[in-house]
Image (tube, rainbow, N blue to C red; front, side, top):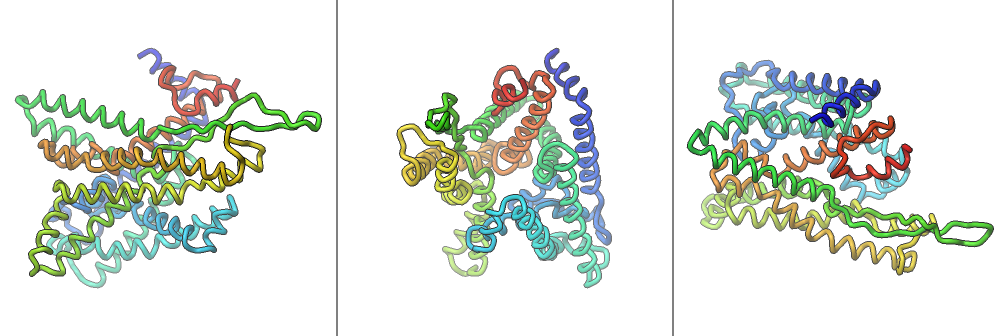
Length: 437
C-alpha cells in the first residue's frame, strides 16, 4: 500500500504528467456529460432502451449514449468504420499504398481522408439510428426532425473525434481508444450491482465465483495482449574498415495477437448477414432455422461460425499488418541478420513461418475470448455483466489500460522515479531504465 501511495505521489509530482492526467479527466467528463444530453424532439421517458444483438453491443461500447438517444448516440463508431475502410484501401488501392509508405506526411493525409469519410458514414448511420428510436418517443416526426437529427448526430461524432485528438495531444493515452474504453467502463458498476442483486444473499457464493472467473479471464486477455515471440537479431559494425559483430543481441518482437480486436469487429459485422438474408425467405423452413439460430448468439451454431470467422480474420489482418518482406529488407539495410538464417528472402520466409505458427494459438485464444460472454450467459450470468467476460469490450479495456500504464511508466522512468511495478514489469521497462540512467 505504501508503494502504491508513493507511486501516486511520484505521478503528481511531475508537472507535465499531472497536467496531462487532469486534462484527460476534464475531456472525459465532457464526453460523459454529452452522453446524457437527449436529442431535441425526443421524449426520454418513452425510449425503448437497448436490446440484445448489435444494438446492445453498440450501447455497451458507447456507455449508454445509444439507448439514451443522446447527441453522442453514434459516438466515435463512424470514425472507427472510416478507419477500417481506409485500412482496407491501403491494401487494394496503389495510391493509398504509396501514402502509407511516405511516412508522417502520408499518415497525415490518410488521417484527413478518414475524417472526411466519417461524415457520409455518420450521416448514413444516423438514418438507421432514427429508425431505432421508435415513433412513440419522437414528439414531432417528419422531415425536419430527420434532417436536424442527422446534423446533430454528425456534429456530435465530429466533436467526439475532436475530444479524442485533444486527449492524444494534451492528455495521456490514445484519445479515440480512451473514449471507447470510458464508455465501456461506465457500464461496469451498474452491471456488477445488477448481478449482485440478481444473485441475492443465497447466491453470494456463486457471485464470488463469477468474480474469480472474471479475474482469470482478464489475466488471460492481458497475457494474450502482451505475449510476443522474440526473434534474435545481431548487427555488424565497421571498426577500422573491418566488419565485426556487435556483442549486444537484440530481438524482433512478433506479437502473438498482432491483429488486436479487429478480427472480432469484422466477424461481428458479418454475423448479422445470415439473419438478414433469412428474413428475405420467410416461407422457407431452412431460412427460418437459420434466422432463429443466427439471431441467438448463445446457440452453438452461431458461436461455431463466429469463432471460425475470427480465426480466418486474424490470419487476414495479421497478414496485412505485419510484412515479413519489409522487416527482412530493413534488417538487411541496417546490417542486421537472424543467426543461422541468410539475409534477404530466407529471412523473410523464416519470419513468415514463425508468424504463421504463433498466429494459430493467438487466433484460437481470441476466438475463445470472443464467445466467452455467450458461455457466461449459459451459466445464468446477467446479460450486462456477461459482456465483460470477453469480446470486444474486454480486449479494448485491457489494451487501453496497458497502453496508458506504459506511457505513465515512461514518464516516471525519465524523471528517475521507480516505475509503477517492481515485479511483473511492463514491456519495455528494462530498456527504458537503461536509457534513463
